[in-house]
Image 1 (cartoon, protein in one colour):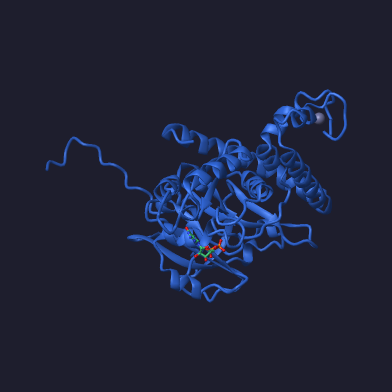
Image 2 (spheres, protein in one colour):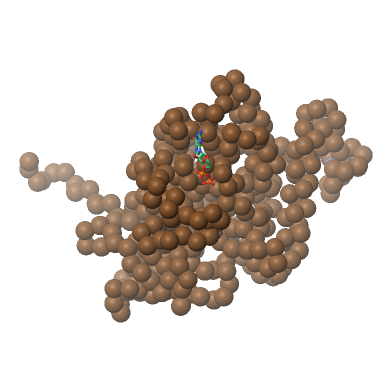
Length: 374
Ligand code: GDP
Ligand code: ZN
């Protein structure tokens, strides 16, 4: 009852629940005291965003205009998950003054004709790849999504959805198959129907920002609803068949998860083409890269060279032929996309980005290290 001895714990930052941490505090520091405020982008519309900002008793969502940061470069357009610096001096609606440098970003090739990348989600910590157990597993597709996930700088997780539809014995085999093609990635069976595995996934997502990726029909929305405790009917009504248009006045793309953490839920994350995913591919195919280190030639293409350790592993059955083929296919696709892209622009973005990725990953690893996950 006495108010003496104990030090008063500092109140958590109102945006902590949205992922604000010492990293963002440091990134925002140059703006502190200028009247500008930090906000997390929870929704993006043409020319404006919704952002959560500190309010008198917690947080509030404000609308802000993005004209000041609209450079025409799709990689720099504010995106869900971004941390924005907002100018609210001229009324309740604000202006986006700038974006804090992204820690991670999920990028896809904008379209087959254009060469630019398009940012789908920013500052994601967990890229959750949903793979349906209800259909035959396409391992090549799993590899593609996992490469994209790694490339983002986030930590990939594969969830095998609809586990209620397969028998335990079959599940073990499917788990082995998927684990075999995703070295270093946690693979988790879940069922939105029975709830199996959901607690594990919720615990994993309880810190940071997660995003669900995967093919249409993989069970992403059902899983998001289960995690968010959201009304399914409402969501169905808000989606059309190709997921592009949503009658949205109430939905947000970045949502608070009840067990902690946030989830970015945008319809853009269904079919995704890779964009400049060299590092993502290297991580996804870490086993191939490891073998390749023993090839006789430094620049071995693992096609027919003598002393090729990769081909030897295939011949000995240690590396499945399918996996090598998939690797080649994705490397080809990646080269082709990169060849279309302006080299200087790419080099510039890459340089900036890779530094941030390294920083983001190091921060994530430190966090994980202290919690003993993975
Ligand atoms: P999305 O396109 O990835 O968002 O996939 P949906 O969430 O729309 O799910 C596709 C279909 O799979 C729907 O018919 C769902 O009812 C079904 N589904 C989703 N999750 C489960 C599950 O855990 N078990 C079963 N049996 N069906 C599911
Ligand atoms: Zn080789």
